[in-house]
Image (tube, rainbow, N blue to C red; front, side, top):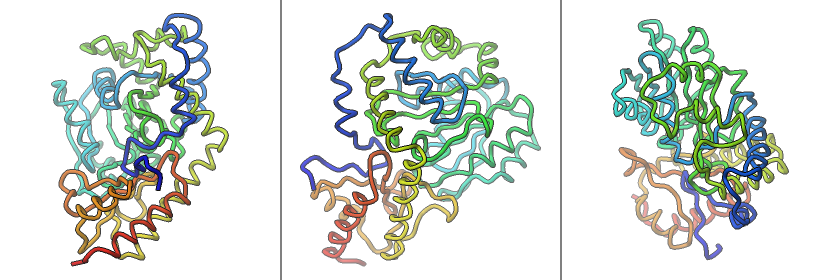
Length: 360
């Protein structure tokens, strides 16, 4: 193993040296032609990756900030939150903190949100927006976004707001074809960049609602971002070094090919699932709804705290369970720059450490 810790947590992920070096480029002004040239380069390439003509805003905040912006900008009526873990519950927490009305559909951790559940809830009450986490990193569940979006699109003027924090750049997203109105992701996960930049795609439907919304604040008002984007600018100082790194990350992804990138993530998930089966570990997420970027595994009889500590001693950092799953689950983040060969070497190291532990 290298001397630097190897990060297999659900994020932040490892940053390739090419991307890291991009932050060392000389600084440019945030109101001159250089920033416009940079935005004109990177943002259409993000649109292409997301299969969308929607505006993409580069927000200088974490994904949680973009979620709050969506709540404040987007809903003409109550929210319906699809909750299957800690991060999907965050949508509801943000909405409540903004003193706005809403309801939750809650399923057991490890279970996905199914289209029939959404359709039944929408048949009982009129909502302004539905929120979803596509890939729930607390449980390793990937929700069926295209099918859920199809249910939403059966209702006029209903917006679909989606957190794709740990799926964007790991699996194919087709925002326009599916009818997604808001799609956001921080770049510290499958984009394999440092934290601090969130990419946010916003539909025309959502922008029209934003124009009518009150109490949005200023910093993350979509109307301000849209007006600036039309001039290839940002309404406030952007994270310029992170935009340099986004360009480098796009270069790497495009050289690999987006299809090849998605296939690599699927192959890493299959490798991890096969390894778990051989060790009699149980995937926490239901079969058919398992994440391509993070595997949550139950390990009966294994002292997970000791295992993670032993791995850390070898420079391998894996994720403990999140929230109520912490005592019984560990999480393997396999996204971004990780490869099948690299993941296989880490799982072999896991086997070696497990071989030296007493199993109850």
